[in-house]
Image 1 (cartoon, rainbow, N blue to C red):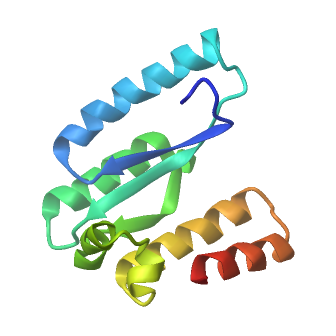
Image 2: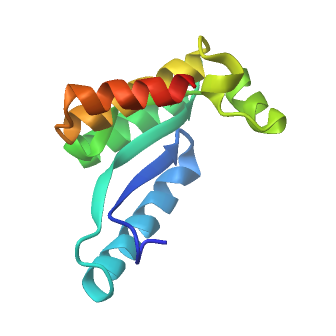
Length: 133
């Protein structure tokens, strides 16, 4: 998939072992960029499954943000029951519960990516409309 992709978003669970996996994935991406796909861009690192009640989750966020700085999206995907339910109904989180924390997190991520890539307001509106249909 990395060989054919234009860019990649790297999801990182806010758990201890995810940090080890992040390093390995970044090495794999560097190899792909060097040998197969020099145009592969890292869109950003996305912190996921965040539980604000856990000290470890806060430490992982701090560690990733400190080490990778601008590569880390501002948006964090919080651990959310509705996010877990949606696939079992064969639905996206937007279709399942558009008002849930998970849906709002993913819509914020979409807006952040659009802003980062300087997409026009027209494209932003089209994507927002597509999410809701």
